[in-house]
Image 1 (spheres, rainbow, N blue to C red):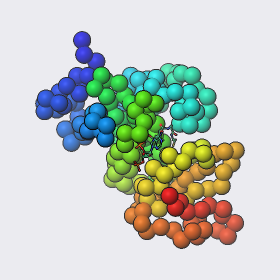
Image 2: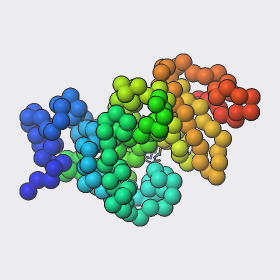
Image 3: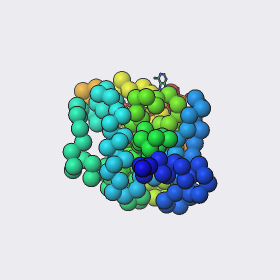
Length: 212
Ligand SMILES: CC(C)(COP(=O)(O)OP(=O)(O)OC[C@H]1O[C@@H](n2cnc3c(N)ncnc32)[C@H](O)[C@@H]1OP(=O)(O)O)[C@@H](O)C(=O)NCCC(=O)NCCS
């Protein structure tokens, strides 16, 4: 019997369409010739989050959750699956075998501000999945009236910092215990950068603009 992910992949490949609006479900060819389906996570789809988490190695989990995490308990699974497509959104990449190989999400924390995060399964890195998921989750955030993303990540995580800086003009706060906070302006194009050192306003603000 096919899993939900496999069924979805098969129906899309057949041009029949899967659950949800057809425009929400997008088959994508990756740079290495493999393919995934990108779609918003369905509300309550804990299985997708569990599948995604099982593909994350120890270091990836640490980078994503900023702590050691062996497993997702019921509460966390339910929280990750609690999307409403307005205040809480998650975009997933699903492999041909039904495995969830990447998820980018935002959670609104203020009327016009949301926290963003992304992780891609270790076996699926470097194929452009995070970039595609982040572009799509950003488009949805803008449509939902979000003007700024906040991201908390390891200061050493240059790959994700570079990816996030592409979403819009970005400032990076000072490193605190190896962790930095990025603020990404979604109202302006990335080329419209803050002059170095000017972002954040105050004279004592140690934020710097992102130049990657
Ligand atoms: C950061 C992360 C999401 C990137 O996922 P990904 O799908 O591999 O990213 P992409 O394939 O879209 O690649 C992004 C860029 O980084 C480069 N890149 C990715 N992996 C790389 C690697 N191992 N070595 C060198 N470059 C790499 C890509 O070439 C790409 O650059 P390009 O667009 O100029 O070609 C993934 O490494 C991850 O899940 N990390 C752990 C979780 C995490 O750090 N989350 C952040 C919390 S906010």
